[in-house]
Length: 129
Image 1 (cartoon, rainbow, N blue to C red):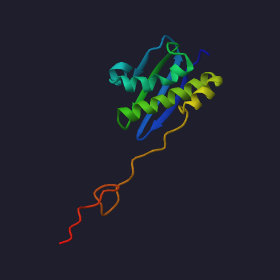
Image 2 (image 1 turned 90 degrees about the vertical axis):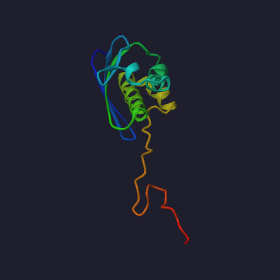
Image 3 (image 1 turned 135 degrees about the vertical axis):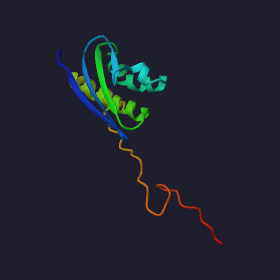
């Protein structure tokens, strides 16, 4: 496997497009080191989970283009894209990644604002008199 793998992941409003190639484990997000982009350890762990399950932590160089949503949504989108790319590189990784739920697109989206209300569920204050 010497070629580059391209995969897409989405979560909420975030979209992550990744290019994965064999390398030393360098991850770059929007032109910045991934530790610099995802500042908290929790977000960094979210991104690295597929590599930990696949036991291929420092075997691939990844370039990520993430846009839309917030950092949490983007981290989830990157995780899905990485899991998809890893299964493309090695089909035997599909079962363990699927068991962890990394190949499932999270369908939860923000609910739309309804007319006659200030938000999706919130109502304007009721005044009896």
